[in-house]
Image (cartoon, rainbow over all chains, first blue to last red; front, side, top):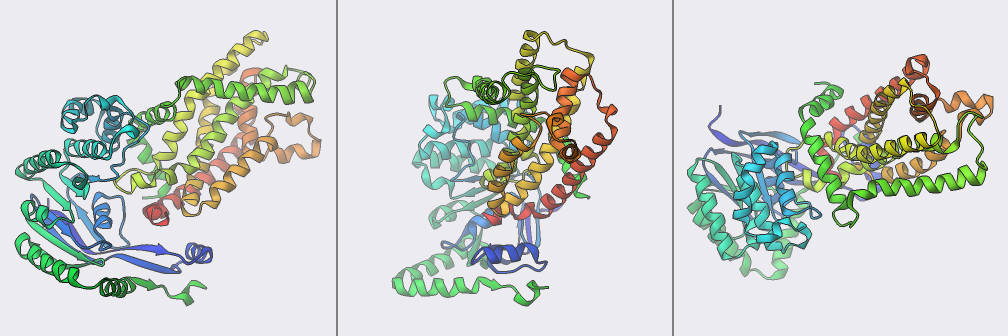
Amino acid sequence: MSDYAIEFKNVSKYFRVYKGTKDKILDLISRSGYGERFIALNDISFQLPKGEVLGIVGINGSGKSTMSNVIAGGLKPEKGEVIINGDVSLVAISAGLNTQLSGRDNIELKGLMMGLSRSEIKALEPSIIDFADIGRFIDQPVKTYSSGMKSRLGFAISVHINPDILVIDEALSVGDQTFYKKCIDKMNEFKNEGKTIIFISHSTAQVKSFCTQVLWLEFGKVREYGPVNEIVEHYSKFLNDFNKWTAQEKSNYRKEKLDEQYILLNRKKAHN
Amino acid sequence: MLSPIKVIKEHLENLYMIGRLARYETKAQYSTHILGVLWELLNPLFQIATYWFVFGLGLRGGRPVDGQIDYLPWLVAGLALWFFISKSIVQGGNSIYARINLISQMNFPISIIPSFVIVTFLTEHMFMLVIVGFIMVSYDIPFTIHLIQLPYYLFAAFCFSYSVALLFSTFSSIARDFQTLLQSAIRMLLYLSPILWSINSMPEYLQPFLKLNPLTYLINGYRDSLFFETWFWELPQLTIYFWTFTLSIYFIASILHVKFRDSFADYL
């Protein structure tokens, strides 16, 4: 058994971009593919030892959420290898709850989909309900919940099904201070049990206070990876500089970098 | 591993999950209805009443089918299976696309999604069979030992529906046109299959072609079990043809499914 919780070896994830239906059809029938690809993750390699708390930072569009979905196993990369040692549970703002069903039903549904048996879920139910702290709403359909309640329930379910690796994708940004504190306590408990946490956040303060390692993504590439203090310092400095730019400069920079993320597949091959 | 085996294996490993997910699927669907699951009975009843009114009374004037059996029990036996198959194919075909957001966040055996959606239609089908039973009693039609092959035909219908649904779930995740196409095709298939009319009332030269429709085998199979006292092994050619057809679709569907499933989320 490896000492690493997560290993990425030259991982690239592309998304298909079509200009029209013709591209789409040609892409389907040709062996080598046709049309454009957007490189959401570009040749990413890193190793995360077990028990670390990894913060993933980066400006919008840098590939943070793609990364979290790849780690959770929902998205499969086109190139490279992802090795995950353990069960992963993802907490995202769109928590994957069925809005027609009650909170209680969602607990079982999510548990089932994560591979738990009914008795295991029943045993966890009281502590999930207690943690989510949504009172009698637990038996109401989730569509009647406020966004804070939804994220609390989503978070409560994900942490209680006892994953080896917990991925938190900006899910804490909607909760209030009390809930945030509760989550941090729970995550510290996780941390002390030697479990691995991936923490995706826009708040450098949160990352600094909680993470041990930081991965800084920029336009699908790893810009820096290392211990928290060093990387957060560099990232904060970058953000400071970046925020001083005019809107025009920012937009030009973004555009230039984004253009680099598109590749055009060989059109000649597509006709074979 | 070979894709057709892989898909079967995913099913065997997740049988419990299929059952539970199906239950929640039904629950979610009727959670906003006052009458709840009762709609599973009411919906088909309304449809049966309409078809009987139009085709049984209106067009046939109440004449029995092939001079042997009353139209209503004959119709309901066929419709019972038709409702199951048509819903399974249409909603099963859409099932993966409809849940793509959910599954892109976790490692989930995607191939079981059409299955648990199809399993939800079994409840309605059981209600339908009870209705068929009531109608048979009221028409003094005796129950025979041939009844025991209903599970066989239902299983065959499940395999057929699943294979078609799996095939179209891949297609319609890539291009939505296929879902629209499937819906139109199913609407036509109701009239092109011997559900509302009997195959014996068609011209002699057309009948062999009509038997190429795998639905003919299934629908007639239900009626053979309930009324005509025929075993499926008394129809060896049709049985072999049906399973060859279904397995071929299953093979193609599972190969395409495994090939494309990693990129379903990309086609959104």
